[in-house]
Image (tube, rainbow, N blue to C red):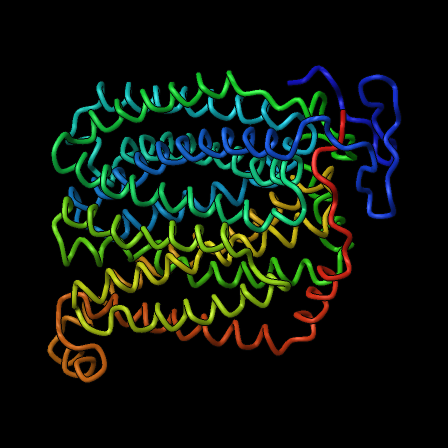
Length: 480
């Protein structure tokens, strides 16, 4: 992409101008800082952030719409569970390669290739929707629905290449003491994505149908791709010197993670947390669509998702404190409590308030992990570490979704709707057609609380906290 091949392992690439970068024992660049001011670099970061946010809005808009459309046409939670599970599985399978490419090439080049690929996939999805009869496309026992779904999901998954690159641009462009705040802004933009996409997706499927929804996604994807071509990041005239090789540097990713005390444990904890999140991946939309029409659900979910914006804004204003890991675990415990109680009764207001509170907390968890990695991992290896973490954490949710969706469809939901099951669940969960899903949410919430409390008590919590406190924050924007 850049015309520059990475140097062999252990050999630093020579940057532009012939100067060999000096490095400290952690491998961080000790070159002179960028000639641009912090304000100018922040402005560039905001441009990249807004562009990536709009791209994520577009892909999520189409993914949400696909989920709504599939459930409303089939009334089958297996379809929604498989869509969510396949999406997360594709992320897991591709993330290490994504991280390797981010380390090997310039970040803007990576983002542009990802945007172009997504545009091509959405064009293919539109063509397939036009040429395939509706009856065949909606028949889950025939391949066309799954091929159509896979094309859309692959286009959406490639956007995550941009998200990995975005995390590394925080290190390049933002001063060390402001990175937690910048990560909060990333969470706020992601929250805005949920608000907009949930409204637009529900309205699109309810009012204009799947075909026009694809057309809207195509236009927006083309616009973000064109805008991305206008952005410039002079702090990265060439790709950073790195030991990344090939297109799937699992060995380098694992070696970097294991070299930092407690980092692998942090990733494992986030992975377990995503096992529980798979329950929500499979069942959140079916529960909402049982309570509301698709148009209502889109709007009300958007209301709940404003919590992402609030949470991200709080981090952007106040940061994460002196120990982001402690902040993360406290947030996870509260998330478990919310997840356990927000469906104890089939009350619309309780469900939406619960989603809002849960959404407020999600940016704290995401930003804390990113901030720790940006502090303790050298920039030339951050792409692979972010990719490795995304691979592990994303692999958890589809496992749960694939297991939970059939269990819910064939056992838990029928049992909860039976006379015996409804009578036994009523004292705890009240009455209603969706009590089986509520039971699964309750169990997931309790498991989340238990995992976070155990993490607090584990020695690895103290090791990771010490690694963060003892790491020298890498300076922003080394000259290239």
